[in-house]
Image 1 (cartoon, one colour):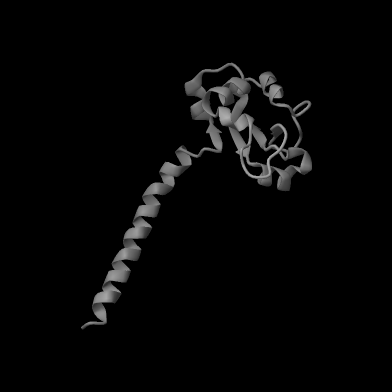
Image 2 (cartoon, rainbow, N blue to C red):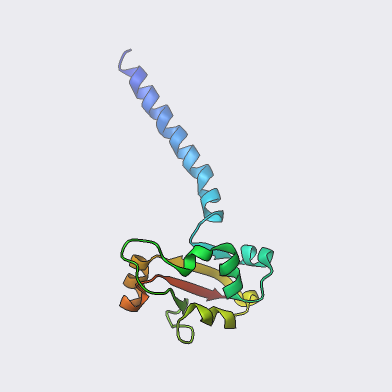
Length: 127
């Protein structure tokens, strides 16, 4: 009988944890600090992708993670730089054309794009 009580407690605790994780999974997708979705872009009603980032996630302009240096570089989702890759390149991208904007911290950006992205990167996925 003594053996069952801890076992029942462990099972109940595990089931409760799984249920909580399932409920929070949907919430974290909506509040992801590294993504701006089409729905969020529509709510902002900004003319360009630059204004969207500036209004919703201004800290993306300067990566504060350890090892970050330099300016953020801007890429299309096919890994090609937008023009010169500067944040001002986003001024040429109409917000209505954007499906998702994703911010990569410096370590992830360097792994994907190389050392020139050591200041972080913004990846633009078009509709």
